[in-house]
Image (cartoon, rainbow, N blue to C red; front, side):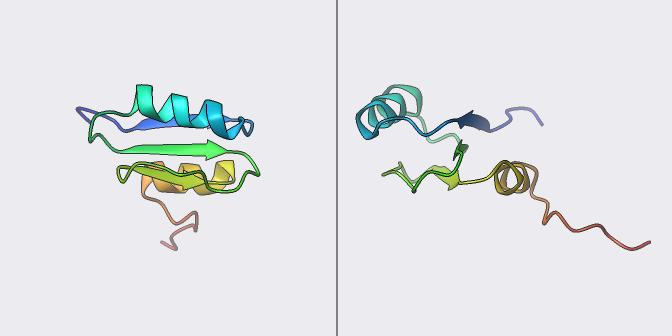
Length: 71
């Protein structure tokens, strides 16, 4: 991948801190996935997707469904 997407994993931050992170880190239109483990979905820019679990975030980033393919 020439320009991989951003991928951020963290414990849930305070709403004010999360907003500051998104305003400073994601001003571009580059795709990003955020995983605040166990948190409710924050207010995010259109180019940022949200996941509550590491598994869901990994599936989002890799484009995988998490299910094994039968050969």
